[in-house]
Length: 318
Image (cartoon, rainbow, N blue to C red):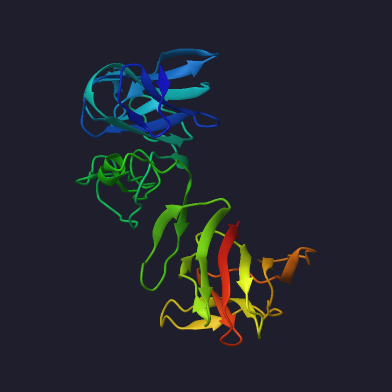
């Protein structure tokens, strides 16, 4: 028996589960190309049992399936819910759970609003309002539409995932919660994955004699950053400075938003902190209390033509 953290069931006794927590009902979608039998189960007091399962029309149905389906599962009082591959013949079944708060009773009119989402992965597309929030599907992708005004009361959002590329590449992005981005002039409003702290490579180590820009970064939900400058060789001279630039979403123009710190003229490791409310840190070259905008980049300014070998990385912090 193997728990599949990527949401794919590819052998007999494979299962994909999630904690119920405060969720009293779950929506589940089974998709992709496979042959076998999947049983929907819930854990009660450490024991797994077949779940109470309903169709999207709230009719009571069996707890097993041999085809791709969308089902509603009553998880009131349960510790976990899972999709269990009772018998497998071929292919890969992709499982996605969506937790809700509310009661699931055959023939009832509402199951509540989605308050937590666990999804098995890949490329997120833009928000789209569709007439059929339950049965609409897209070629080569999984999609989930939840409509608070509909009979089943799910929250409207489109989350479409490039499952073809993910399976072909042999890797799945980890599950996580989603957040709503209210929009930009170029992208419109859309859903995207909320992140914790994460690291980025701004500039790989190389010898440079002139000012250089890091790649443009898209800040999803970080409030600030810490920049790490690693100088492995330096010819001295006027030195180099690390600054942060904001990028205008309309024109693409840039503007320096950080102070210009003391120039670095020697080898070593140097840290720069940009975070609202940040206090001066003993190990930091400079500390600024400014937030980080949606689009930004690191710029390294060379004071003259002297050669310096360095790399630049950043940690985006929520």
